[in-house]
Image (tube, rainbow, N blue to C red; front, side):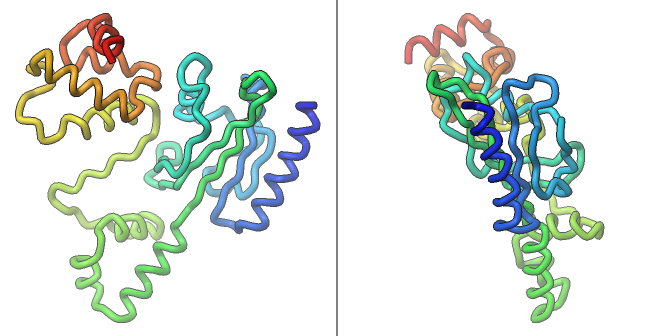
Amino acid sequence: MKKRILEQLEAGVEFLGKVLGPDYEITLYDMERKDRPLIAIANGRISGRTIGTPLPELVAAFFAEGNSGREPYIANTVARIGDSEKTVRSSAFPVRDASGRIFALIGINYDDTRVLQSFTDLLELVHPHEYVEQEYPHRVIQATRRATGAAIPSVPGEDEVYYNDVNGMIGEIFRMETAGNPVPPDRLTQQERQALIARLKAKGLFRLKGAVRFTAEQLDISQASVYRYLNKM
């Protein structure tokens, strides 16, 4: 039965690749193949993936059994391609058997490089180049400059973070939840730690492997203490 479903999904990958167009990369992973799980791909030029490629670390952690395996899907996250500066809008949908076990995973990456380039070209038809650089969203301009290989102007205080792996995602969620707090994380009171851990839990941080250890280190408490806070919720 699973074999038949996978065959149909493989055909679906080719179908979606043709229907959605060249800016959408469609992937299909056989989750029961631990070493070479990627079995079908359309428009693989976007990420450079080929048949047999391993599952991305962040996706694997998100759907790991005993961690967040009951999550219905991942939709519209920002992901960086390998070690490059290129980013895509990434989504993943797990296919489950009758017992709820994930046996296949469908991924969709959208590359908006061409759209952003067209947007910038249109703006520069009606405005001077310097005006566009100054008045329009800097991240849009950065994205198009990366795509074309042009120099990226620096903007003081601009801090872009893309999730390349699980640790990067954990660190960024933690940073966002503690930003603006005048007291360092390791100086928080017990009540403040409880409130922070509650916010982190609501963000889904503790579904990611290594989040408890990271949080304990940042708060200068033991991992057991983090678990105690979580158990109170």
